[in-house]
Image 1: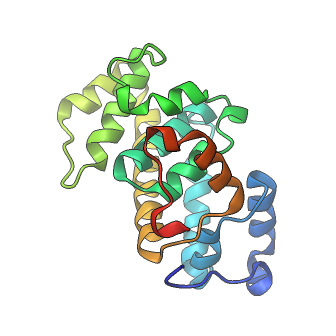
Image 2: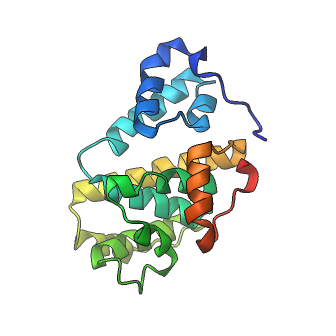
Length: 195
């Protein structure tokens, strides 16, 4: 049960276009955004972050999904991990890469650039973080500085959303829940407080 109930979709008419775009993008409106909508300025800010980080052309969609999924997974944020895994295949990120996330150092589904990316996500997800200068140096071999800034921005954005949804105990919507139950439980996914 959520700790703060999400608003109804029509409760913030000033965001009708944003809500419609989210529904068009996801096929549903995540409860997290409907809870954020209780503070319209916060929803607006998160929308601007999404425009700058999630929808920018700086990083290809499969890489964006991998960053968000891996960081959320390594953070133990099951709500966000389910969201990011659901629909990932249609956007070019294979299920094999999702399922091998814990074996990123040795799995042959990843290339060296993806391993560097996943290492960064894993180390950033630790509390306190375990990032080293070498983690960013490794990324430089595969990504431009502009892309690295976008990757770190995605990690920071997802850190906010991960904590938001864990603290709020945001109820996971049916579509990502069904996907996670069918595909991610084998690697340890669980609904936790989001049921």
